[in-house]
Image 1 (cartoon, helix red, strand yellow):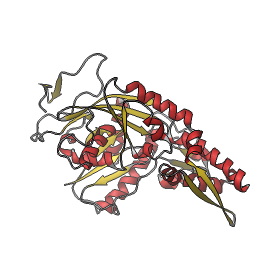
Image 2: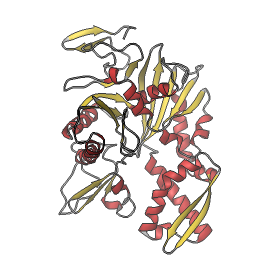
Image 3: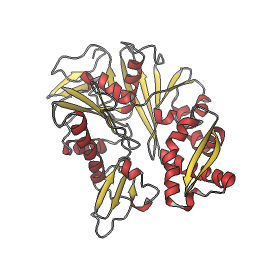
Image 4: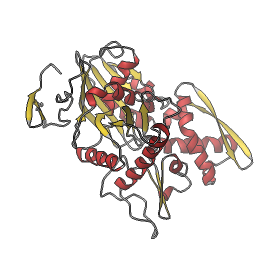
Length: 401
């Protein structure tokens, strides 16, 4: 049976699977929807119109997925009233149809593991699971994205145990969504990793950072070339499309040259990483303050950055100033890789799948045994779960998986 891991992330839904080449699997699909004339377009095609038709674009349907929440843009008389859940379903349906046709050959026995940010509430988790099943996905497990990324990083180090890649027992995983910053606290034990706490900043998100950079870069174009990229929607869209690659480049070099086509001419500006980082320094300080509030006094903390966070110019330098932390950037796809590696401990059966927030690296459990990770994700303050309820029986939680 083929196993696919699908990472639900509004900046880009990523599909990964063992046994398939990178060319077979689709590229990450950004969480944008274009609602126009009764038609809904999602993913990269919608993102390509983000600056051309901003009033008809919705990029919050994954971040704020809700069965009753209508899109932020007002539908035209000829357009149906769609909820965020409707848009999420349209986006995921398009992705799944592509996966079934291109990767699975239109059929075949397969299972899907969902990798989901810890910022989702319990009702949102249930809604996302319902959306995937409405799309026809054979979902057999759900796991916290930060936890899966930690397990993927251990695998990348070529270790069989939870050691040397991240020797620290206290881990903080930092990720940026389109409209949020998410910091997850993880604790590594002798043979397991447990998610303890999730903190969410409503600002900054990738979109707010991009808006700030768009204005700063436009000012540089006006100053250096007299071109105003905001004068025409097509030029503004080209500038917006160039941002991810530019930020990735500036995360590793001091200066970069950006070329922008406008009319029959090509304009160039030189941008400094320090200038780009300074433009969002207040946002970076807020993230660093949050990290500092979760690190433990007198104990070294590994601050693990998603590839999205690691690609932001100047952020690593700002976070390195937080005492008692070691900044560890992770590659793209590591969360999905971790889910695939731990499939035996994530896989479950039945209509109500547990959201996995702890994973053991010990021997795999026999078929039919209660999943050791199926501990309630959220418990009352000051209490700890003592038993796992499975099939009407209560199993005590001990040191053994």
